[in-house]
Length: 619
Image (tube, rainbow, N blue to C red; front, top):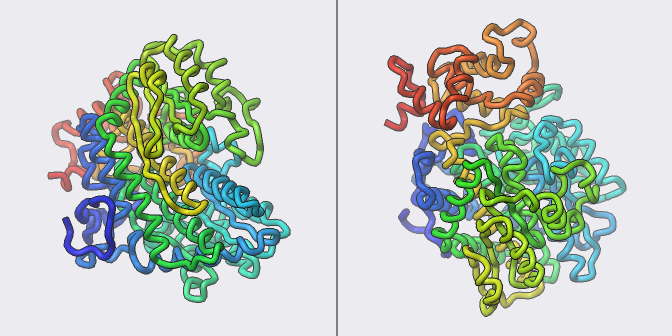
């Protein structure tokens, strides 16, 4: 362990990582670096996968090490102070909810978290008979709740328009824009709009890179880069006309997969400062002590969650087996745990180029429980059918022994309803698993326990706090469920060969961020120049060995649009570069391989191949 630590912690955090050293993948932001702990993730068995991803999650709570690069961490004084300053400004909104608003906005996972948090804190206010004053914005609109709409995050003008629309008539708006990598144009447009109307808006940026690592390419069709917007916002910090909350939490366990640690850290950071604001509104001062008390409850959630590592590994193995046999994972959740399940399922599609049917989430009460602005979207097609009734009516008849069904609930939910659903599922498959949350002193009835072969039981201590205490426990359970599902699905797709080392190598290139990530992965695995990697990536996108001038002159947005209809774009480019073969030959090799990982690994061993950056670092 590292030496002295300033604060008392509930869990042991890993020693400082190689990623904190000067020169480690220095051209990349922290959110895109590969985590040294998971360098051989693709060779791990289920138990090892859980342990590695557990340790990556624990990095969220690391304190900064003054002997290394001075990255501000979640427990840094400057970060805690900024959290307190933002909490005080939230208080001002709470005191005058009719003319004021807190807006949470994000793209992809960040947008879904914005919905979850806005609804949670509106629920807290309603329970106190106060006026709700939280609102969410999600790039792509409510369709993004249950489907991947990642291309919409490239539009800064649309972001600004959406913000202006939801804030019409308000005199005081606290805007929280979430972009884990400090890169999303949609959020840049909103921050820019806020800074042009500081008489009404207080902009807050949440992410997990230093401003110096924000994306610096000018956003296509716009006047600035994200970094330029963030630098302008940084100048407002001293006058408290704008804030940036960007603690370093370390690289993702799966390189660049910000749905994992980035999403969890977003939830922890924002729920902590918003809960403190609500407590302070009850005449409790905003103090560092209040922030630390709540942060420690999330550390406790980490400890409770990973005390079940053995059972999490078993669920991961079962899920991988189902997916390998062309089966499915169906996640049925109650309350907000159902929304967490839907979030995880949706995110598998762009991350692992999965079919939307592979992993699906369902929530009791459907859209009524989600409380989204646009209401019931099930008429848009089967992909948008998310209620338990939809599962029983439309999916259950085709469930077979190759499928895995996972139920997620608390012992405060309707156990009779759960028991009936278990009985229906057991007629179709024996692969039933449960994540069950209980408060100390609660026990799962024997009648239900006997019918379920595998139960991940999580028992939470009673919190002797005021009204907000119930929400802390709710937030702990949501985060715990998120950690389990992130680990299970990421591990299952790793076991299926969708990860090479710790790189995503088969993601959908459906926005500019993912286009840049694809070229970066190509460079790191092949050692070729940026120009050469871009050229071969375009060959893979368009299926043409010789690129026309028209293709070469097309914007990145145009390339992204072309890539949207193609599969295996990145792995085809990787193998083509490693083997110096044509795109057609590369695609043929991948299609005849056991997995994408095996196709890349065999290509790495071709005699005379130029070593990539990752090869030399791993020696």
